[in-house]
Length: 283
Image 1 (cartoon, helix red, strand yellow):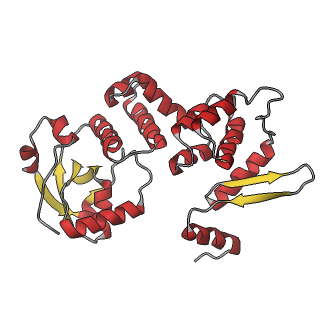
Image 2 (cartoon, helix red, strand yellow):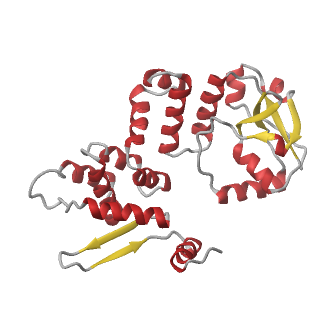
Image 3 (cartoon, one colour):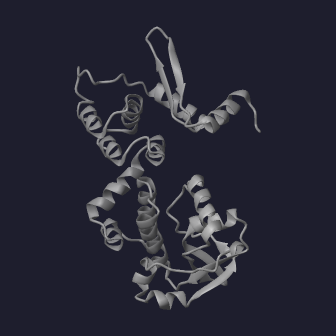
């Protein structure tokens, strides 16, 4: 591991009101396996490709920015730097430089979410779940959580409303199949069945946010050309298939009973995974 250690003035320095030099004086090295996960981590998914890229960078240049932890009952818990820690684990490093900070549980939760939003490019669902976690852990309301995060109350509320959407739609936001603008439009529909119907139309026809808003506005108008046939049974079957294959499934049929099932895959590795499910291959 390279010994070069330079800590950019980030949120840790700002919050603590200490200079970079003062913070750098607190850097120590501990065993990689001694670092426990952050219980307040808002990010649920990590790009293995980005972790691999970071590992290559660490192998070449070393860790430029130490990870930040707090200590509780003699154990180190991660606050900031999970991707760096995962990359170090991938490289089988024995030790890693850390900065130990003293935070209350409130500060740990808030700082973890702020840091991830600012640096890690969280998706809208992860931000919403992070805000919801703060509300529950800190027992505060929408206005309080917005103040802590430096957001407008309406912004925080719009994020939190996304958690009311069906799981398939939330997964669509996480995977990037739809944008937050699509999701906001879906929230104006009366129930989750209708939301799923329009969601699958967005995917099928690659609707823009503007076209989705138009579609939603006309969804309940009798006789409109944009009205789609509502069939809750078909929606339920699609949801079951999506759980089985862990991907978007489209099921279409005609009044005569003929139809087709479309199962999406993202790459050849994903295709192999789906093929194994079909063939019963567990390898």
